[in-house]
Amino acid sequence: MRRIIKGDEPSSLTRYRARGAPGGYGRFPDRQDLREALVTEQLGLCAYCQSRIVPTAHRMTVEHFAAQSTHPELALAWDNLLGTCRGGRSEQSGRNEQSGPNDGRGQGAGGGRHDGGGRHDGGGRHDGGGRHEQGSRNERTGGLYCEAARGNTRLHIHPVHAPQVEELFSYRFNGEMESSNGPAQMDVNTLRLNHPRLVRNRAALVDRLRWSIDAFEGDAARLHKVRSLLRRWTTPDADGVLPEFAAAAEYWLRRWERRLERRIRRGDAKEPPTSSGPHPQTSDPAE
Image 1 (cartoon, one colour):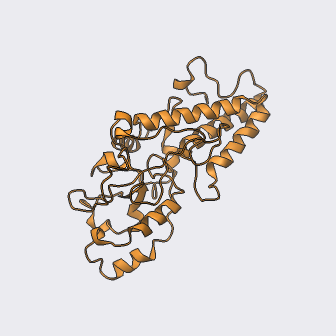
Image 2: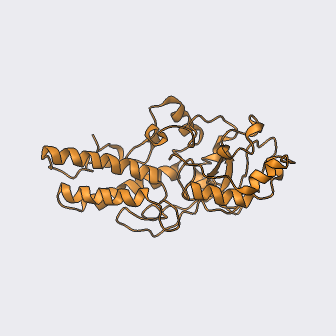
């Protein structure tokens, strides 16, 4: 999860509220304006899992952070609207955008494009640096995740309002996401952010990053590579998007950057900075 900096709301939303919002969110006619604005301010990433989202009715969901069923007064509040992925729903069977009282939140269609064929130096753009597994049959039997999994369950960590939201979450070599903060861990569980597809893609990403760094000889060269990768993973491209799973990549790159800086200061360079023994998939190399 990354901090989201909200921009100006679409003028169509402002005008609709000014007219008294007849019919509430369910009758708001300009959903495409919402999608485009959300994708732009979220740099093309799902607000929760960091998968790719694109502004079409079948490839993303307009999510209400505070559910309409419990907070109807926030149904048209721009800060309460987020862009999320399909969460394991297939594009063919995705729901139409919903807003009824039973659903209580927003669109049921959505979803991330998981582009393949990215660069193999750990700095790929739209696909997170390599080939990501594509979704089908609830993302290969893992069930639903993100907005699709939460129902109307209350969430605690708002990616717009929570300070230093990135620092609340950590990632393991095996791709798992966790938090020592109780409410943040509750959200990880509610949103099923350790869904098998997400875990596999994050683990594959970290592995590609490790190999691209360890291929260099000497800590100074490796530190230069890490900083180069950090720029790629934290800077939107020409289309204004970040690579998928950018938060996980930044987490590990910053840890490796700190470790390399310490090693260079101490003159300790006995092994690659990302090495952690025979089972790197379950270890933390940064300590």
